[in-house]
Length: 480
Image (cartoon, rainbow, N blue to C red; front, side):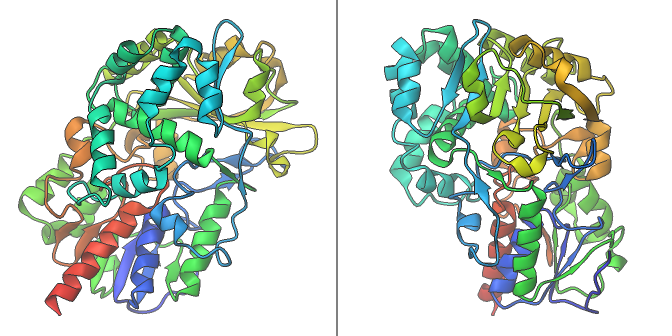
């Protein structure tokens, strides 16, 4: 249903994903008049839930687990009353099943994980350092613009010294057991990069610290609850949200003083036209997108029958066996090939949120990386990986929904070729996106980018929007 929008606004935000809403909220808090234009029928971008398989089964269409929605600067600053999301914290943040019938279980306790890693426990403690204990400080610095000065320089430098290494080299240098190496490789796969590449350790270390610090919560009722709550808070601040309102040209914006795009770089270049010129425009047009995602949602007749019982204590699972297998899968994807044994990210929310499925039934969500725009059906390969660690899983499938890379792009045009990370995490684009610039958010006079294709990149944290709005407000104050 379309909501009535005002004729003009001091600022217009195009797109209402978490970053777009974060930008709108930041601007509104500063007293600016803001209008949000959203092409879909409801706000939220990738924060969606639906009954995509059968009635009564609620599935998260895109994002499902939210390591960076608790304890990070934007979400910490949203008042609880107008943001009534019920965060559910599973007993464990993560389980990584292994072929011997065991699993690596990551709880909030560093001691517990270290003990389970046996002779690699002490090495894990040294690797993690104090990053889990000081995760809020670390996250605040990491989620700043790339060239922003850290508020905790010593902590940030210690992280950086570990972060620049490839995960494959790090795991072999510090761990002696296949168990620990597999676990670290799974964490590193969140980089959506070959694990032999520099800076992949930054992802593994950050994910390890966040798992202990936040517990990787899920929202009660599904991801759509986050979108609804953010939109309600924005409206309470006076933000006008207009849905079913696609923006195809500058004329669709209607007299805005400044425009913030929660869109992919190519879309922005097409809409803005000559308002963006030179290296900025070339950077947008030449922006590199990363691998795509192939996802399956399942309605299940019962819980997934994991061989390792501890897997049922975690909402999120990494499924891929030993580190060599995970490394090969991610390497093949980067080369444009589809692995026979993909590394699978799986979430089983109904174990902890009964509202997701009818009594006695369950839901599960899983995806793997594939080459950008791949048309290969990965359903059987994903299900084979789950069956490998949960014999009898296939027998519990009542219905499934498949979302290939093209399906993700249809759901949200920002996900170009199924790229859910907002762009390739090449060493250059980790630090400089969408272009190399001292002010990456400003693309031209009154034109800003606030999507995951700007720093600090992908993830549900809202900081791309916060950073873009803050930079624009700073420029405005400097002029005044």
